[in-house]
Structure formats: structure tokens, C-alpha cells
Length: 549
Image (cartoon, rainbow, N blue to C red; front, top):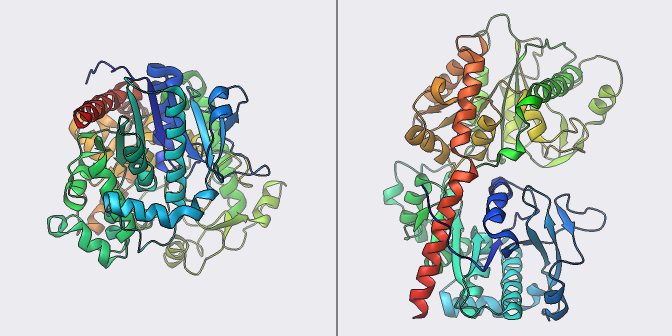
């Protein structure tokens, strides 16, 4: 796809995950930023929430006293909105504005009334994080309005891009106050689709029979769904990240996306080829050492390390099926230890003190509960923790298969690994992401970018893209895309176990798999996929022009 970039005079992109690493959208934006900045330089401005304090500053934001000084001196923002301007500390280092939005709560009822009158957004049934998301995105809209009024936008190509329902109010505010600004709305996963799956309901066999509005009422999702639907219909360009989600949007939001904008990856996050061997050795050393201190057993250097990671959604992300597949590996791989990690942030209470102390000395003993690296505040209700115990992995650490739960965000200060996820990924031999609900699937894409073969399913956008654009088998792509439906849980678990067995016992040449994985990742480089966004910009500006005529 080769699209000539359209002229853009100012491009805003608003997300709850700008300089705020929570999930996959952070990866989307932070890896896309370099190519956007290459096209449009400092005409690109990312907007995120200022949820940080002086004692817990954002590790991803570099504040600047010189950037946008003229606007700051003339901003005249309403009381209760604060802004900090700087750069996002990622490849490309784009301008970022972090917004404090506490003042918006005082006017939320009046604002909700305005949004009902103008766009039919039903905020009456709001609960949970709805008010917080709307307060932030309302403030983001005001900041965009202030910047546009300061620089003057008459006759200019200005685009405001909003990600997920959490920024929908910002898009609607912009449409209301700045009609000559072209708006884009991207849903990375529909709120109602995720809720249907999260509540254990079958999505795919019955999708054509679902009505989004009806299901929103049944699942107490009226406000989020109403906001998301309004943003999708009001945007000058509506996008989503995969063909899987495009079908979902058409059915549940009554709006077919104008274009599918698949998620790419920025190769700058991957160690250079000359440094990869050392990165792999270092990562394996860290993981094997933690496992040894936790279980009291020695893991040889050729231990087969497999992992799953991502958002803590037990069913949607396929964590349930991953654990059952690992359980099937017992006694299948002869003569090799298997170490299976579940790297999924949960309600974490900090690192285990006994494990941290053991890592700081030369002692070696089996710790109590040798399946978890950090304290969790809800062990009695955590489904991952409960399933690992019920499968018996905590009682038999001498088995050839060991499972370790890592319920925290991995970074330099997690207290046990003290290594970011990307620092550990090169040390893995395989990854598994058997998702039931996965609009795109960044985790398998990250994996192949680091040369680690991966397993995913046909219910993920990434899995479908691999099958349609790259190839149909593990040997040619480094990706095993397993067919998954509403009713074939155990056959999928069996296939995962079979593929892992063949990788671990040497049936497949590992170097060939790794090279194939890297080639697949190269096809998903943002240098290629950014063209989908430039086409989205073209669509948005054309529709804005048509609308204002």
C-alpha cells in the first residue's frame, strides 16, 4: 500500500495511554510515533492524562519549559485544567501534553446534558471509570480548542484523532466547537464486544443475532456503548485495527469503519542483530535465576522457556487455555525442562520479600507457594493463581514442567526481575497467545519482532493478517495460527501442546523458526503500515470539507 502523505498543518492524537503505559494502545501509539514525526515533525501533538505526582513522575515524559511557550502564556484555560508540555521519551520524541482535569468534574452534569442534547449520548447510567475518562477527554477537547484558537486554523488542514471510547467526549466536543477540524475515531476493541466475551457469552456463533444497544442494556454498559457509538458515527473518519473488529463494529455499533488501520511495530525497540545474542543470554540468566530461587531446583541452560503475557483477561486473552495446554506437556518432552511463565499484571501488592532476599544471597531452598513471584491482594479470587494451584503445579516442583505467575508490570524496579518485558522477551523460546477476543494482538507481533516464534489464533486480528498476508504455517512465518471457534477449546489446547512439543524436542530447526518470525515482523513495520493512517487522514479531511460546504 503506497499512499502519498497529504499535507497536515496540525495533528492531535488523544489517548488515556499517552505517556501512561497500561496496555496495548500504549504500544500502538509509542511505536507509531516515530513514523508520524518523520512525516509531520512537530505538527504532531500527543495528548494524555496527567495522572502523575512529584513522588511518582511519569518515566516516559520529559517536561520542557521552551516548547509551545507562546501558547502557554496565552492559553486562558478554565480553572481546574492544568497542562504540562514536553516530549514523549520514545523513538521520534514527539511533543506531548499532559492534562490535569480535576476541574471538569464540577461541570460534568451540565456537559453530559449538552452531549445528550447534541449527540444523544446517554450518561445517565454511568459508573466506574466513565466519569474519569469523560473528564479527561472533555479537558483534552478544551486544550485542542485553545491551541487552535491561538495558532489560527482557517484554511489549514487540522486533524484531531481520538482513541477508544475513553476519549469519545473529546471528539464530540471538538466536533461541536471546532467544526473545521477533521476528526478521527479509532476503536481498538468495542466496549460491548469485550463485555460480551468477558461475561462468558459466545460472540462469534451468535454475532449476527446480537444488537449492540440491547446487549448494552443487558450487561449494564449503556453509557460506554452510547458514547462509543456516537463517536463512531460523528467522526469524519472511523477506523478500527483489524477485519475481525470491523465486522464487530458493523454489527454492534451499526457503523462500518471507513478504513482498517492495522497495528505495526517500530524496530528501534528491538536490539540490533549484533547485540541480540547477548540480550538473549542476559534475559535467560535472569529468568532461570528467579525460577531457581523460587522453586529451589536448578534449571539447566537449555531449559525450554515459554510465556504468555498481556492484559489480565483470563478468558479473552486465552490464559485459561494456555495453562491447560502447558498441563498437557507433562511427560511429552523427554530430557528437557520446561519453564512456563504467565506474565500478566494483576492486583499486585509488591515483590515477595522471601524471594527478593533469596535472590540477594547464594542460598537455595524451595520457597512456600513456589509458583508466584509477587504478592497478590486477592489470591482467593485470582483465576490464574487458582488454576495453577488446581492443576497441581505448586505441589510438584520436581516435575519437568514448572509454571510461574508474574502478576506485575515488568520494569527496572519491579523488585524481582528488575528488567522490562522487552528485556526478557529475547530469552524466550516460544510464546503463546491463544486469544478468544483479540481485535489485533500486539503480544504475538512483539514476539516475532524479537525473533521468538509464537502461537496465536484465528480470532485475533494479527493471526488473520498473518494467514492472509504472510503464509499459512509455522515454518514459513514463525507464527502458528490455530483455528479457534466458540466450541473447540480442548482441541486448541491439544494443538498448542503439540506445537510446543515439536519446538522443544527439536522437530523444528529453531534458527529457521526465528528467522521466519523476523521476516513476518518486517512486513508489519510501521514504515509500511503508516500508509493506512495517511489514507485515514485523507478521508477525514475530505469528509470535513464536504461537511462544511
